[in-house]
Each structure stands twice: as structure tokens, then as C-alpha cells.
Image (cartoon, rainbow, N blue to C red; front, side, top):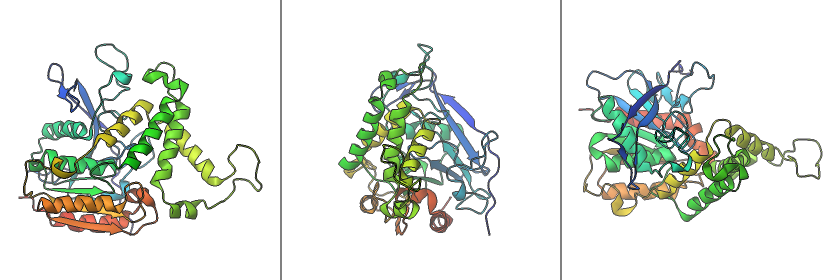
Length: 373
């Protein structure tokens, strides 16, 4: 039986770090004021023990579930959040916030710099995953939540879940990092550098100061095309496209002969309508800077009570299973209660957004055994 959708939701905004009390960043610089856009689903219980923080991936946002008044598109993890779903809103208070550095309501390079009255552009300071989590912690404080029941996310969202466990182990009971890593490999950094260079090579980028003239659409579209190739798998591309032609015959020109070419162009040029190029630069750099390997993870904790569910997907070559297994080995060294599943899927990295049934089964069972006392 199909589960009921959460229904209508409304964006909310929290502003903090008003000067002179600015948010201190890992780079040594500071930022303020800072606004976080967020959404909530379900009700916070009387003792505030049922809160689950959902963390989004690179191009995601706070709209994780339900429908917005002006947008018929369900949230990006709608199948996982709602009554009777994995994150059951009849039991849990679920929230999701857009990260700092983003462009969907939270403070980022497209936001107005209070000192100039113009968009920050590249005057925006470099940010890290730890900075994103620190900003979220201010939101959790504002909502009066002493301890999160769980922090969950896939890809970059999984990194945030790990960072929460490392930075604030006393502020959460459990974490579910999905399709993620403790640090980027050279190959992952290389893909992100090509993505950044494609944006910066577009003359319309204007060294980041393009807000009056329009953003570098061609460069950002190519960047997103590169990303989409890494999100899928060889199997899923074969199943979806194979070598199907858009028309009956080859054109013998540099046009979209194959359906996969048309798909990538469609994805790329639709992306520029909803995402800021500078945010893409800043967030990919934050991904590359992330490193919780070795003694960097929970540096002051020998044994953690935080419980973990780690999930990977066999066909994910962007964040391959061996990286999740590295997470599990590190958690074992911290004597953490850890459950690990490497799921079979043909969807590649996108599996964390698609394999809802398998994830639901695992997440429901895991959360049912988390002690809230």
C-alpha cells in the first residue's frame, strides 16, 4: 500500500551570528549575520527527544519532503519522510536545513554582503563541512533540542552526519551516513577540480562577480553534466539509454545524436535555472577539504555511545563501498555500536535517492532500537 505523503510544507528561516558575534569558521575567518533556511515535518515531543536532522547532498536543499505552495515537485527524499515512512513523522520530528554556502535561502556567495550592499561573490569566505555542521548546531540550539535522536544523510549529507558525531558526540544518539566517505580520494578531488574549472573557464563567470550580468550558464551546465555521469553507473546508463538514437539516422554533425547526450544537456541546462555557480564552487571545495580519517574523528573520545548505521551501494563508483568499509573500521576502533549494509543496486551513487524500500527497512529497524532516555 502506498504511504501517505507528508503534504504541504512551508520554508522557515533562522538568522544568527549578528555582528559582533559572528560565526567563527575553520579558515580563521568569520561570517555574520548568517541565515539558515529550513523545513520541519512532524511534531517535537514534550521532552524533545524525537528530533531527526536530515542533511542534504551537494546540490540539495532544505526541501526534503512534502510540497511547497508554489512548487508541485515533492522534496528530494519525499519517499523516506512522512507518516509510516522510514522517518515516520507520526513518531519523529524531522528537520532539514540548507547548508551555509548554498543558494536556497541560506547565507552563501549570492547573499548580500552587509558591508557593501552587493552579493558576496568571491568575498564570501571558504567554508567546510565542519562549518556547515556548526551552523546547524546553532539552529538545533534555537529549537531547544539538547540531543538529536539521529543525524542522517547521503553523499555530502553523510559527511555531515559523520561530522556531527565527531564535533558534537554528546548532542546526538545515532547517525546514519549513506554512500559517503571519511575523505575524498585523489580521483574524487580530480572530478571536482574539472567541475570547478569548467565553471571558471566560462567568460561569463567574470571571476565570480557575475550577479549583475548573469551567471556562467554554459560552464555550470557542463559542470553538472560531469556530475551526472558520476552519479549513475555503467549498468544504469545501459538500461536507461544504451546506444539509442534521438532520431532515426546519425546527423554526422556535432549535435545530440544519442539519447544520453540529450539527457546530459537537459540536466545541465535545467540545473542552471536553480543553482548558483559560485555555490557549486564553494561546496565542491568543502567536500574536498573534508577529512575525518584516523585521529581526526572524535579526537577526544575513546569509546562513543553514538550508534551508527552505515549504508553503501555495490554499483556506486563515485563513493565506492570500500570507503564505507573504512568508516566502519574506524567506528569499530571507537567501540561504536555499528551496523553496516552494502546494498545491491544498479543505480550507482543515485541509489541513495532511489532505493527507498531497502533503506526504509533498514532505517526503521535501526531507529526502533535507539534508546531515547
